Image (cartoon, rainbow, N blue to C red; front, side):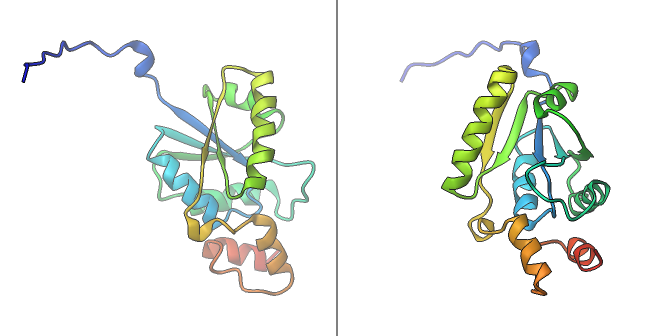
Length: 173
């Protein structure tokens, strides 16, 4: 067997930058599925910014400030995760944060169709931004914020879908 020699190459400057991913959503409320996704991403990226926004097509039951506070509490065990709110175009926010990665979760094929449209639009707005998709653990893939809100509204038990602080906040809203 031939002997192979490897020449050590110094790291190029572009490999030394911090890899920041922006995980946008309304997080209304943040669910165990969201938390699972952020935990997975935290091991892949240097920094995750959970960007709590508003969606003009969705009704928001919890105020933005409360959704930020709940996400901060739920994700406080992750050192490389920051939670903030944002308004306006996501691509502008991503650039303002010095990032070029958007993190999105996929639960179903229906999610993919919608997310694929978003990828195309975001690329048209800023071609330097990439989108990375992650899937939650199988046992969490059916959880959605919309369903959690509906179950809570009808008096159902949401404790297995959200963090206890989120459950308390929803019960008190």
